[in-house]
Amino acid sequence: MSNKSILNKIKIEFEEGLDKSEKNLEKLEKLKIAFLGRKSQLGQLLKTIKDLSPEEKKEFGILANKTKKEMENNINLSINRLKQQVDLEKEWIDVTAPGEKTEIGHLNLLSKTQREIERIFTSMSFEIADGPEIENEHYNFDALNIPKNHPARDLWDTFWFKDKSEKNEKLLLRTHTSNAQVRYMEKNKPPFQIIVPGKAYRYEATDANHEHSFCQFEALVVGETVNVANFKSIAQEFFTAFFQEEIKIRLRPSYFPFTEPGFEFDISCRVCQGKGCSTCSHTGWLEMGGCGMVNQRVFQAAGYEKNKYQGFAWGFGIERLAMMKYKVDDIRHFRSGDLRFVKQF
Image (cartoon, rainbow, N blue to C red; front, side, top):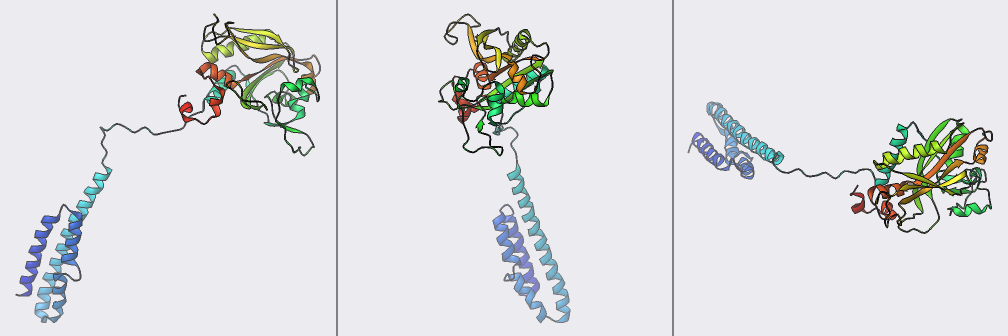
């Protein structure tokens, strides 16, 4: 059989194999090796060209190389077409399929509540101030009219540090956000109105209503003519905005070393609207925390002239506000890390 006949036979067999394999990538790869590889029949045939006469070498060499290139182009075209089809199938998106929800983070309920408090007070032209969580005795107690060895210190169970500061001061985790009062007043002159949101710490047992680590927000308003009526008006506006319903408030006489006079602050029960229920012990009122007119000794500790200024302050728990607004029955849920709780809000 002549070389031309063998070449034609290889070409026909190749085309038949290509037709049968054009939808199978694996078969196409095997076909390419079988017909175009170094050990293929075509490869062996090309090696015989050197033994031909110059005339035959010129004629058959051109034909053989042309046939080989056509075969290579045809099979490479089929392979590339099939690969593109496979890639498209992988990238295909069913636009009618329901979407998959992506899990994303969101604000913790405490952060959400704190931001809502800040938003309301900044809308009333309050400034947001801050103070250190690791504090010394002076700002946490002495400057707030709670001197060393005074019985009033027993009201605040305290976490003390073993090591002292560089100035040989005893250090503690602040027991309230009131430590920022004197710090702010030392650098600012009245009139001003601020809130101080942040963490506080008490060395006490935990239960459904108490935690050793909690959040407060301090409010402090100071000027020459500030009085209890101003305090009640601001408090009324805040609680009505926070709970988004009309809230009644009341003050009951109480004692706090840094206020004179001092009050316990109550709001009307949101469960029974003040009519009386088990939540409010049938009184119609819920206790929020302590407040009062700032004791003049606190002003003096900040460097103010005695009796020149008046002001009021309060310290309310952010957890307690969140519990009442979002119907949370246990304060320990906030820091439990339980995603079942976190995802509800």
